[in-house]
Image 1 (cartoon, rainbow, N blue to C red):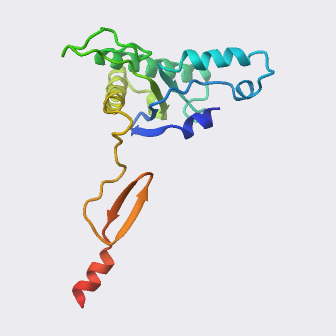
Image 2: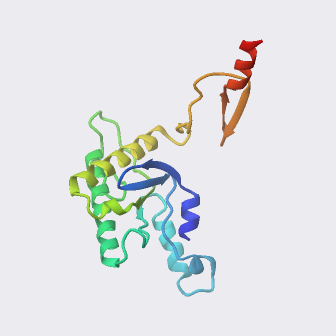
Image 3: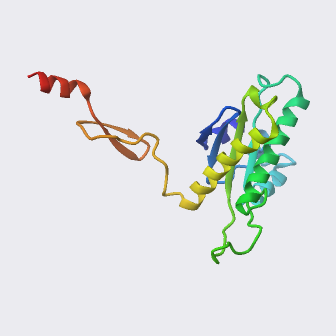
Length: 191
């Protein structure tokens, strides 16, 4: 099921300690065999979990064995990343599940809850990193996620901006960027 979750996520940031992906929808971790089989005894419990976590912020950490061989080290990395995300969300005015701590923001407007998924995929450097470095990088990723969430689903970030116009166009997703073809300009100048 983790592969299905990874397909639904977009790249948020890539830092020295971890890579981060996000989605504006909540994707809880579910067992694929149980979630697909309605005759399984735990199927109803998985459905209830999916409904309960539908409008919350879900923070996952997928730590491969290439980062650390021992499960205790991987669990420590997971706990540190989750705690750093909690501290960063607290600074933004949200709890770990994306619910606003105060009913109203400082500007007098009512804050909405954050619903979505944040996925951290740490690199091997996260094992020996100090707490302040982890907090700083996680805070940047969380701030970026909150900014995207406040902008809304229509305000996407273009992957590559088009610096200039030309004849050749390339499409990425729904946006069309026009690229300049250097060879045609050089041929035109020489003629």
